[in-house]
Length: 131
Image (cartoon, rainbow, N blue to C red; front, top):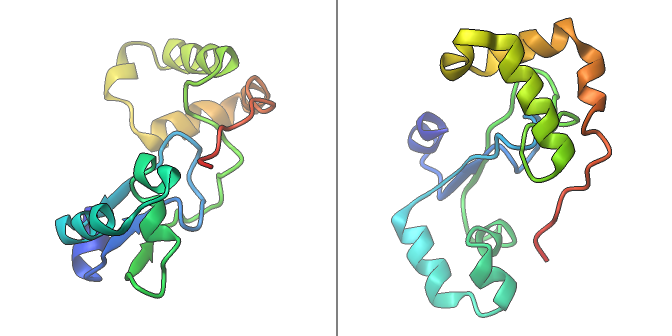
């Protein structure tokens, strides 16, 4: 994310502009200048609460850089907001065993590719959206 941000001279880079990564791996990078500008100009409570919302809604004013994965895995949910999310994460940790704390994105994908039925555990969990 930082590499794209720097190489493309973005005001804001994120893997949520065009979502392809699992929910829970959301990452955003913005410049200090962009953050200060949003702070000075954002007036709505939602824009004040959700820091990057102001920037994302003004693509004509800011250079937005989407970061995407090779494959669309946006149907996966790796966040822990609901009980079902926690159940899935616990299973993944258990499957990874001693390697769990050092596991990366590819390691977790491998676990779920071996057990595709696990992705149904939290599929029905609703994501809270910024208003």
